[in-house]
Length: 261
Image 1: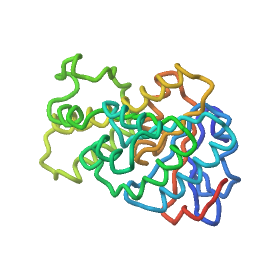
Image 2 (image 1 turned 180 degrees about the vertical axis):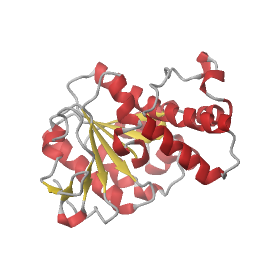
Image 3 (image 1 turned 45 degrees about the vertical axis):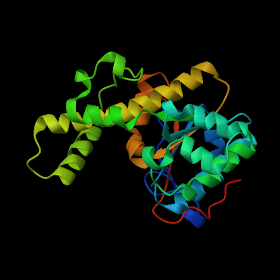
Image 4 (image 1 turned 120 degrees about the vertical axis):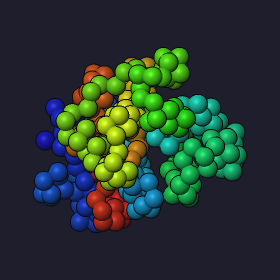
């Protein structure tokens, strides 16, 4: 099933050998079908350089066939949107941009992994959209739970849609793996709340952008854990009326050599 029709399967880049679907079967590039949709979600391992090369190749393709692409980025909280706007307008040097966006604190991964993408967006006057919330809010929810955070402190984020059972089970297993077998049920519940906040915040930013400019394609980049099996952000987008986002993930092999321009 092609992205944009119903609930498309997750599709993965198989590097130079091409694309495979969720079942591992080869298929033609899904990029043309994805480009005809409303939202494309590109997954990544944040510290894997090949993933960023693959993302840039996909972004270059989308920019060619859909002028006016909006680039959504998990890497920036919405409180730093002004830094993205300044960067695109040409008012900031790279060093100033990294300082203004507080990159070292809000993200921390090697900026050289991301700067080619940011340069491409700037060179093509592509709007960049901060999708995330401040880390302090995520940490607060992880310690106290979503219900204990006053509405005024939620950065405008609404109540997340309940997770599907498989996603909840995956998050519980992830928490247990990190914290050990003695983790209390309430702590696990708060951890799930924090993950749902993260997913919902990004989905709401995407949905809000689409409502403001429905004719523009939104290409959003984020960690693949927010996308796998259409849980996380795709699930929250569906609850917000955008069930047809295309989800594209890189394989564990090098995808940087797979040019789709």
